[in-house]
Length: 115
Image (spheres, rainbow, N blue to C red):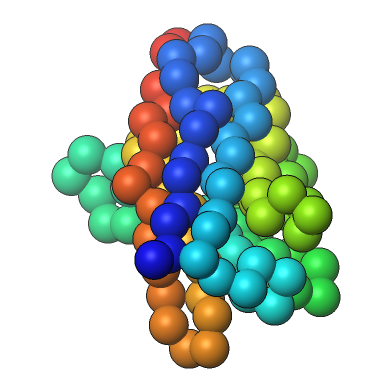
């Protein structure tokens, strides 16, 4: 059974930082592509960042220079370090894993940035 468990969300003031974690089990983590999506109320889900098993990373434009995605294959965990947070970053952040063409999702963690 695949499980993706996020943690690290919370309430932070604008300009602050948070680090999200996503612990994976039930997949071959080292060969999986991992990433983060977010969804704000009334808005479509949007890709925030992705990291391939090679370490190659991609980011949405609004996250470049502020967010950093990383992975620890020994801990089966992917991280999203978020700095210089803005109120528009407020959303539920969900991690996902892509393994052999299948996508698995976590339950999500709320990030709220106050102005």
